[in-house]
Image 1 (cartoon, rainbow, N blue to C red):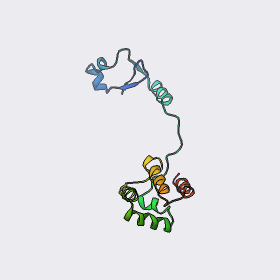
Image 2: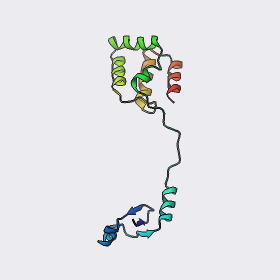
Image 3: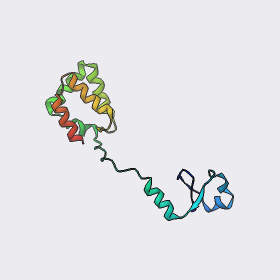
Image 4: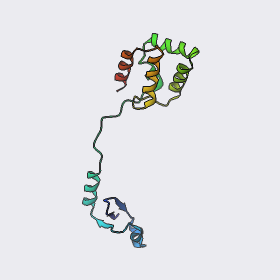
Length: 131
């Protein structure tokens, strides 16, 4: 399959059938055919630098197991009388997974600290366990 490079170093691919039917005319102006080695070099140069590994994705049960039993009980009790705690609890249970990379997780943990169900130190321990 022929590979083409446009003036912005973006790669374009056409099948042999597309080339035979004049598909090259649809490529951006200034686009040139390049070798596989040249295409590989462009791909390698355009790879983003690796960042830190994403945090673990935990099932809601796994996430809630990071809380002590007294903390779990406090959250469940608060969910019966505190709308903010109930909303956090319901959203956490409805999540497909929980990750610290999701800003809602951090906000929820902050809310639990704010209403006195977690200490800042316990929040930090939970965040560390999720990383």
